[in-house]
Image (cartoon, rainbow, N blue to C red; front, side, top):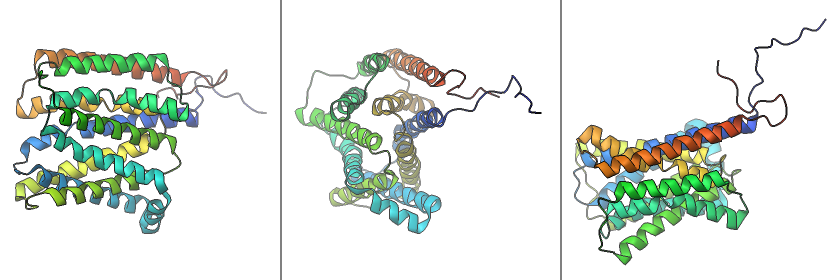
Length: 317
């Protein structure tokens, strides 16, 4: 005689909801890795920024290549590079542009201006997804994007100046556009593994930096920090992002990446004692609250039953 299942047992999460939750977590971890960039950069004493870009990109490429060799084996890694096609090549170019252009933009405009424009990445990603691929964006997502942009504006308002640089601000817009396009393509071509594309992008960035650097020599202490700068800050962050951005809408991924802007000043404050201004704290609180509320709403949405009696997210044990 069959026995009924105990009443306290809950159905397991649906594959789609579980995958989306993991995607949220991985993109958040990517932003967390990227947010360490400012802390690490403060320890590097190399005079030529292109020297730092070269070694950072090279170590990131080595990390991503070793990661793929460990995960997929030599034959599988070669197949991944061969299968990424034009979408993968486009993503590689986008990340090479975004990671390299940042340093050039700093020569023409302030970090504040760049961060403020980067806050618009979720908006651009959402618009591109909607216009090119018809991906619908919920009203709560639009609201979260608007609040995040406002919060970042408050964060950097102390540093904003009236001196506008067409070149610097143009490069900052290019960074945001390149990142947004890469995010949208990663989501749109979810069947294509983008880790090799990220790896190729770091190789492109290293080649570009080598052509611009006055020297590629670095001290022993600098090389240690450059290794962390490349392998952890950039390489591990790209690996997390390449995996997570495949399974969540592009606007979500770009919005979660805003945690980089939020956490960056905190790590510099804790490690180097650079106390953030009151406006930075207020703006950061606005961004943090908006992101946490948004994530909570989205997780609640994912936990709603797809049909009566089926839970989207497994109950905690």
